Length: 269
Ligand code: 13P
Image 1 (cartoon, rainbow, N blue to C red):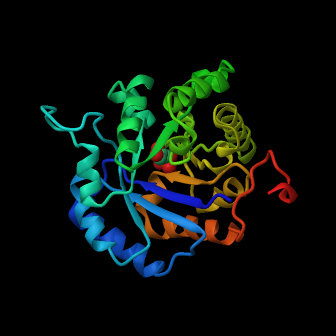
Image 2: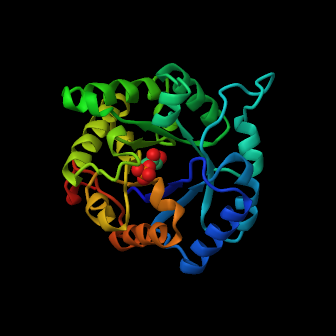
């Protein structure tokens, strides 16, 4: 039912030469991508057009790491949804914890951006996740619930299914520390329950990615969880062998019927 999405968030790494070399290395290692897996790379704004040109005969999709919520105007240094679509992007990351922490993006802004993205048929990947202190205080469910509800508020079912959620516990980002497969599944199932309370059956179609130190050595255990529908990968996406290793793990785990979430037995699908 759900197709894996393996997405590389390159963050502020790599100019033209880096982009060209990394994409060539990915394509050399992985000329054909299974239909059961979507693969996405999110380079910096200045490398988007180049990446789109270089990938035009490939199945690899290109997305942006951020966008402005307004249609256009006097917003020096910003990039709009229509510009991203015109460049050839199909996805946009929104509300990454680094943007929330360093650029003061709050839930209301993330929601506004999400609605703008959807109105341009740009698929949003909205990031949610708790800080270490919040997990230690046992507030992680409460935090993720409020981020998720805020992002999806005001959407109808048709819009909601176009959104991808990325659960990225902040304590696992760039730290080498990963949520255990059980911790990831617990939170992903919780997010899906929240979404099913809002959108009913449609919630089964919403992909929930895990992000936070995913790498080839832990990808199998994370992606095997019933509600983990892919990965949003930082560090390991900057290395062709690691990124392709994760893509191949997802391919191997894919079954033609797709992912079945924890709330359903296979017979009910
Ligand atoms: P790392 O994979 O480097 O931990 O980064 C995760 C992330 O922030 C992806 O958006």
